[in-house]
Length: 116
Ligand code: SF4
Ligand code: SF4
Image (tube, rainbow, N blue to C red; front, side, top):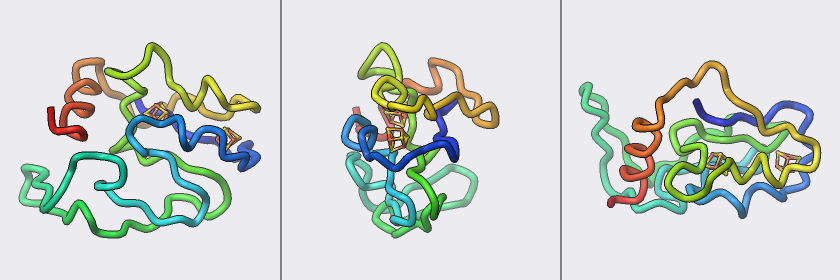
């Protein structure tokens, strides 16, 4: 699974610099696949869908900090535990039950994001 931020977030910003994948963004701030990753050029999702890694994507939340599920690896390959959850003062970085991935899938995502 990925980690998500609930609406209990107090917008302190402590989690954002801790993410090894640059998956955390401030409320209302747009995001890109290329932010903090090795992704560049066109991304081919393999189902006929391609996307410019440098294209600006709409913010997922306008109220609180948010996590981009496609960039979150639960910190696999970098740390033993999710760093956002470790630093969050109000424990609002929690498992996202709607995004389930195996450890192998998370490690593959990490390798994909960082072009290993
Ligand atoms: Fe980033 Fe790790 Fe939190 Fe996912 S679990 S958003 S990779 S710090
Ligand atoms: Fe919100 Fe927690 Fe991140 Fe602070 S550390 S911005 S409270 S999710």
